[in-house]
View 1 (cartoon, rainbow, N blue to C red):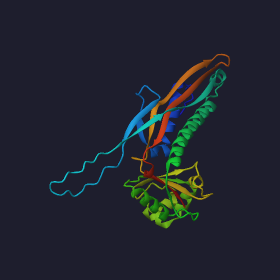
View 2 (tube, rainbow, N blue to C red):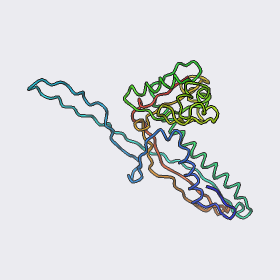
View 3 (cartoon, rainbow, N blue to C red):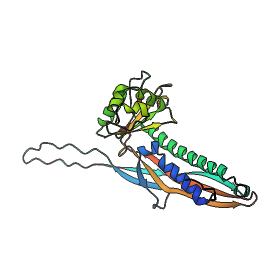
View 4 (cartoon, rainbow, N blue to C red):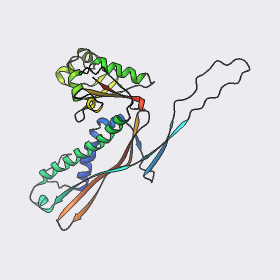
Length: 275
């Protein structure tokens, strides 16, 4: 949100700024399907996941009993953590025209909230990926991406998201096979935009060295994810706020908070790739 000269920094402004930033910069959170848990009245949320263990259809001889097949259900229990930050707006800041400085602090709070929520999603993805592919030659290539896609599809999933760290992004910008397969063709080298490739939405992660996380020191890394099946982001409390007066310091303090959790369900619906 843009702060105008005649405006004041209110609780609504702070909350809305943080919420707007968090919901526009999803990155790893976009790898998770969403569940609204705001109406449960508890810090624990349980949901059931049908396991893909139905038996196969068989040829049954005349008069023989038909085998009965029934899927099993996995119970998943999730608890929530509260993520919060605070900004203090002093009387002097309001009276002495320091709103621009305070508006930057609000932006910094929004960025900090976004980074923390994305880190929680990243950590859930990183800690629950069971397999990795790639040739570990120090360069991310279209062949590495292709092998990762095949690996996810072998589990009967349909991957729709590719997350690249900066090293992988740099390698692929100069990979002719990747650029020809990418929507937009060779223009990707000039524009720096990746877009889509083979049905995958491509996102660049500026903060985490994925390859390093999986033991490839300074090497490129990526994730390929089926976002429909891998896991869930559950929201117990959406972005909310509260305001209180600090009379001793003559300041109004605004706290912004949300309660969320991330849970991996089908960990083989994602794969880590090291180049």
